[in-house]
Image (cartoon, rainbow, N blue to C red; front, side):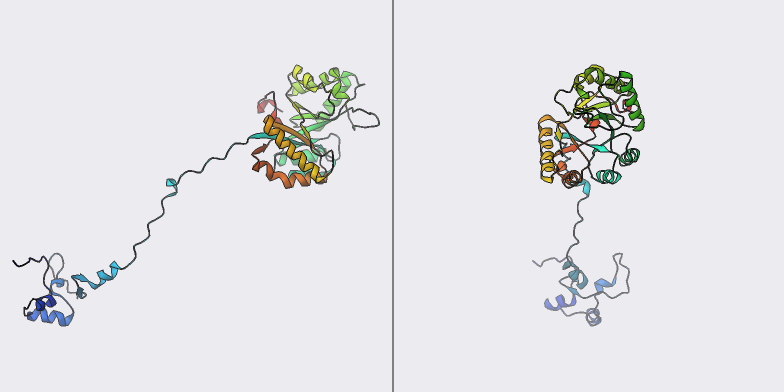
Length: 318
């Protein structure tokens, strides 16, 4: 039985079948066209010559088969897996730098350190107000570093406007008010020296009453093991912190680095820790060099007020 073909025969296929090509077919071969290709789909003549056919396909279509396919577009970003959220810090520390107000350049260097260091400013110094303005402009928390009587007074002098054990309560109060007015916008105070004064319940009570009235906190620099500051603060409802680590009572880079390590270890155990240092060149250098270590250790450096054990709302702190 003869096989039925769905396509028209070309002149070449007709010769292979032993048939004589028609005059029209011979003319088509000479002209490079096919009679079947001279009509459009609708049967109307196109009037345009067609390319030679090879194996039933136009030559252009064969070339198209050899073209590499276009690359598939990348999946949209929305289909990618979300990034893992950053882990919260495992502990928090506050680093308080005391004795500010004497040297403006040191305060500028401190403000350039990229962690949230708390500025504690001495009153009545040449640059006290400028340092406070600088700290606030850089978003740093500011405290009053209140001079108080130390052991060894008067040979050891805490400075102008100090609170002395021999003062009457009203004079203690007056000196404290004058210092607070000299350093506006502070969030709390800590003692400058004060190893003798902070051992006195009555005198410390005068200080705590004013702090409670102003909604300020007290950071005990812990210059004596006999300090009554915690008991006095609690009895007057004053938020209280205590220093855990001194950074720089030995002025050596290796010592300051070791103290920062101790601060981190204390924070991991306790959840929080407070360090106090001073604007010495060596302290500022080490703090700048080690500032990234806190992030690597997942330790957040925060303003001192964020570690308060007695919570106050932000609106309550002046």
